[in-house]
Picture 1 (cartoon, rainbow, N blue to C red):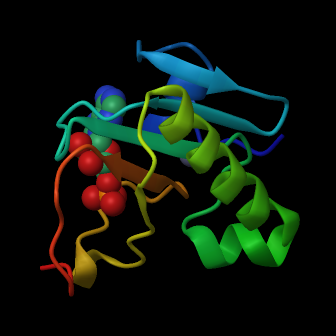
Picture 2 (cartoon, protein in one colour):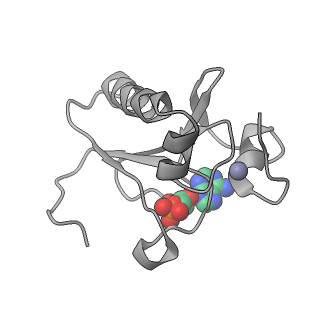
Length: 115
Ligand code: AMP
Ligand code: ZN
């Protein structure tokens, strides 16, 4: 496993910072976003540190599939038929934590395109 000692999400994965974990496998951890933007707002995070989704996919393309399947499983388990899965890539589009994470959002109507 690769970890960055300075990375917030690596610290959550290591259990050094608390989070409400909903789902955990050998490869991924999913926890509630601390500042939810919808009734359901969960982050699905690979255990291996990489700065963004494309970098994780380069390291192992199956990670993308696992995040998508996990996102749907969490939304379904929480009672939502529909969800939005978002990967911000780069500070210019709002990425603030540079450890790959898919935002799983559900439970309210959403506009397109996203703001
Ligand atoms: P992004 O802006 O796409 O990089 O998303 C980072 C997300 O991490 C934001 O939605 C934050 O609200 C969330 N976040 C920051 N700190 C924590 C934390 N300690 N626990 C859970 N979520 C967090
Ligand atoms: Zn990390």
